[in-house]
Length: 268
Image (cartoon, rainbow, N blue to C red):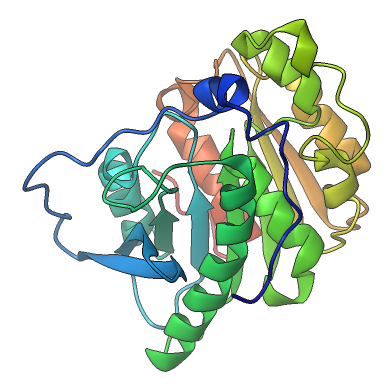
């Protein structure tokens, strides 16, 4: 298929996959909330990725969202509804092996699939008459997918948003418990997050929890500092940790995203 990416054999090793990915299946008979719909996005001949679209309107801005490693699209039903009520089309996608998606997750597949997902989303938006701008957002592990797109398809997106993102692959693997044998990654062997964000000069927002124990604030700061964007913002959520960032300050979080998408302050 088109848009092939380089293989990442070290990141695809079983020891690394075991900590990078924690796939969960979608609960049986789960249904999207009112105003939302499920999609299947083909990424390979026999593989499709599950997605859930929370749609506000055809003229609304669009937010393509890649979630964290232990999450699935169904976890975001309440947040998706809040985005829709704020006038944002929230388009959240899973990874291979997550939710109702086919296959098994690997780092190589995550990056390759993100490209195919973006192409499919853009075609879907066009065919269904959605005319608003398209921003790409990645949370935690999802920052790898978002930065892959920022580096290889910058013209296909109108803004970049990174939430709880990591700058350096080795320290993240060490925190997750990967052995020292995998921590001497040479240039080009990790996700290359800093290199990728340097390739995107469009509007950029970096959101990070002040007390993130998994991906420290300095990682988000490093991504922000490396961004060449003339229009960029760093939003630090006070007192928040990696997994309570929404609960701690959802109004401020939503306001920052809405502003990046060109909307007035929609938080309440």
